[in-house]
Length: 509
Image (cartoon, rainbow, N blue to C red; front, side, top):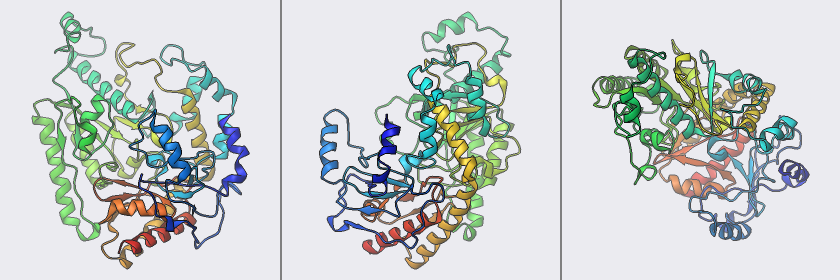
């Protein structure tokens, strides 16, 4: 069993943990251990983590190269970032087959919440309930487990955003958004039809089978924002605007996109300009809602545009967006796939906005290790069964894992800790930027936990060299270096990170 093998390898966990953020090899001269300003072990579990990163070979090293070649024979490895040894990865550190150990502030693209091989999650994975969920995986829509309501109430719904007390469970972030869009379309047509009690007409039924209106509702859309990312399925891909490579050759819907405000930094030095940018963006949203030739029935937005470059907007902007959607009978879908589950110092990033009324739907995945969308209005349930349906409709094993994650977050107060550590890390990065002008540009994410980013003039080389300095880190947009630490990231890890980043900056000058 994988969990027991991870436990048996605990002694080796403290000796090896590697990483590689790009396919390019880390220089051989980087083979060394790194001294760090703090030697304190993890605050959560004794003897859980190594003291710091250790790079023993180039990355990828000889063992990794051989295994990558073997893998490439049966699986496309062109997007490979780092071949990982998950048995030896632990806490905040990721390992590779060559024994390299890196501080991981990318965390599987923001998806590992409480550390690799977390002891509590290993225990949860060995429970009889988890075993049942794995080997007797149910078709949830038809054959839900007798305790499914208890599982949802003790986990997913325990942390539901304020005002949203129901959930549709899904498989991944793209799936969560896709099904939320379907709910929005069905809700709008139900309104136009006169309510859930009104039956479909014969014309609607027959035209739907021909992919034509009125049954196929070709005159409805979802409004999204430029540089946003919402997934790669057909509907979600039509709302994704971050990179052309995601969209090339794929048929797309004729749906509107609004400008996401481009804020200037430091924020306190560009107040008027940023207010004007947000005002213009909101005016564009309302204009599109009222005038676009395929009318939007919903607006989807990320609290922070993560894949598109870590683009922020103020709480006032999002309150304005909510007011516009309410005024125009358009649903607001908040995509919390990457921002949710504590990384911003709130469990849900939209809690920072102080909205007068909650969003209509909130989608989630990544750190939750499961997926779906929350909602509150019972009319967002389709008027008939099988309209929002698939075989699995989620995964009880993953829902149970999220329950274990929530318990770990509550046990250690990890959301509050993340807010505190984020302040500490942001201050250190501010000072680093002052020390090396032009190297840490447009630092953003103040007051948003560890959800921090900055622009680098040599971003791609920066990421590659970071691996040689013992850090696995990611990018977003064209120039951004994005930090996505786990919720167990502490001040000592922030010290290690900033010391490594300073070495990278020096090497690039």
